[in-house]
Length: 508
Image (cartoon, rainbow, N blue to C red; front, top):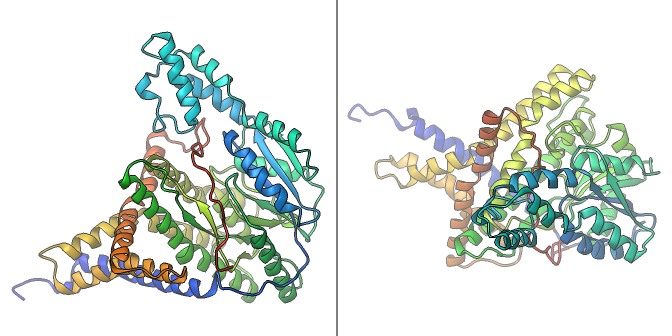
């Protein structure tokens, strides 16, 4: 061996082996999930479920009419259901903050990258106002005048509801400083419903659940009631992600497609299997902490009595979805994942994609705060919180290390001096993360790929994986520099693309 260490004693081997093991396990999870979800079945006739749909909105004037046009006809088939759009006074305060940031901006500063919170029309109007003044920079007064000419989301909702005159639709305006969770909680406080027979259904303004999706949800609820003697506490409608190729540059379109496909694979590989295992363990094992539920803030159905029992969505964290799963876990409440998926819009532009990834990673940084708050309130033992924090830390680190681990395997697979066993292991790791899941996904969707299509989509997935950790790294960097993760502006950009025409799977 000429004094060389055996390959199994080298760090490169252990890195490749660890990544290969995780990716192969993930591939097996994808295969198992695809065997369970989105299977064509005959729809049974069941009693419609009562849903109190809540859509929190912020800087989403352009999407209110579309949401109402979708949800109002949809809920007519579900007697007793309601639709509430909840705006927030935070929008006016954030607009004032944006005016301050716009003061001194030049024409080249008025871009989506610099001001993702503003619409294209607002940016155009600001640029025109600056050109008219003949000055090099925008004044605070000019910026305030331009933005004040645009209606707030609350104004648009009030106008649309007055035009529709639909009794099932309500508008609640939240006056506090909280964000999405506080908006939802404000709506539920005004609901008369407080039973185990009705649900609070949280959707985003661009969510488009179909009538068939909701009927199948009602069928799933009826089946669970027959098995458990009561309706499920919480139900998660898991999503696949798709883009509309809105970006001008081919490489940006490809990166966003790859990120959407990678996020879809995460849903199939991690989200659905984790929820399924967690729900089964809660129902069939002894009391105590069994895993960690990880809910998502859209397509989330919570029984009204359960919502009140756990105190609503958490408002002390930056985001609410993962923190809400933590609270449900402490209460030993199962979270059921529906055996079918919906399709939701994904980020269309690279800045939006990176900003979204950074925002989503905030949830993992909230886990210590969740443990401190709820342990002080007597929810869960020290062992419960230690287990939850360990699982949360593992998931956060796995996301943070996706890009470095993928880059390391790529370097080992292509490196001319890499020893054959290490090269083979690294290649298996890459194959299990890119080629194999892409082919599985395409076959499950009824569109087997040719060799060229497989190579293209696999390369896109690889690019998405190399990009995946940038958001988490940025989130940690901002936290380290600023000392806080809270900001004057809500951690979201303006929605810039139209919603997908349909959201349910063709196989339903």
